[in-house]
Image 1 (tube, helix red, strand yellow):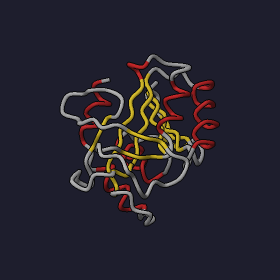
Image 2 (cartoon, one colour):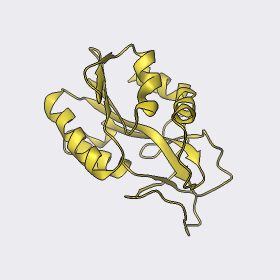
Image 3 (tube, helix red, strand yellow):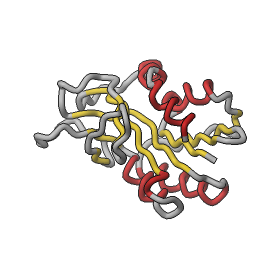
Image 4 (tube, one colour):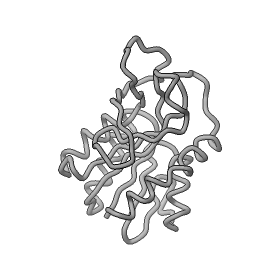
Length: 170
């Protein structure tokens, strides 16, 4: 079974709709081939909820999909990156996971920032090989502290046809 992990419902919405997933509860949507976990923001939500998924479902591949800030203003908002694999037609950048929203960076290299991916990968590596773990991030801002609208986040994610193509191939 494929696991898609997101922090927010608005990050998961286009996948729930596209794959016609059924709501099990406020955090879990599924069908016979895919399960989505909406774990919540940050370390504790990711660690506790993700562990539950691996223990209770037969996960064969895991995807963390969500938004990230970027310290390089030349990187377009809405740009898709896979941060842990070199994939055809999908860019890659380094990713740093912080426990709070990152609004400033002294790094010279273009870098993405989020609040869950490191913990997602940490837990997933206990159950899966690295080749079966993917982290997809969509640039949502350039290290802004402004709270993003749910509709805006949903739109950024829903435009990512390459993720859907990749999920269908794997």
